Structure formats: C-alpha cells, structure tokens
Image (cartoon, helix red, strand yellow):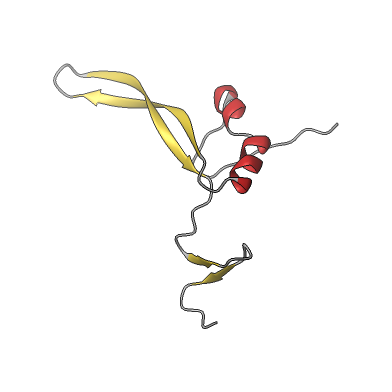
Length: 85
C-alpha cells in the first residue's frame, strides 16, 4: 500500500496533527459538512513586564468546508459570486 501525504494551507503538520488531520478525517469532513477539527498549535507570547518568552498551546479550528468566495449549488458544485444562473 502506498504512502499518503496530507498538506493543508495554514497548518504545519507534525506527528500530533497528522493523527488528527489526515486523509480519513478530511474524507469524513466532506461527508459531514458541519464537522470541525480542533488542532493544538504552539504559540510564543512575549511578556513585556518580565522580558520572558512564554509558550502556550492555542487550539486552532479547522472548518472542513467553507465557501465564502463562491456560491454552493445543491449538487455540490460551486460558481463564483456574481455569476448569472
């Protein structure tokens, strides 16, 4: 069986995120359009009072299907905004 590679814009895929956001979870998102995947992300925060850099874990939400630049038709296809039907 071949190896799959999942690349998602805006998310650096490491081992933990690879277990949460992979081909199978993306396939579930296509079938269930209301599903959201929560991914932990390491964030660096500069504390100006103590001159320290702190690391926190911030949860980033991945919306599976968001058509904010196109019109979604009933058959699943899309058209650009302003297109006359």
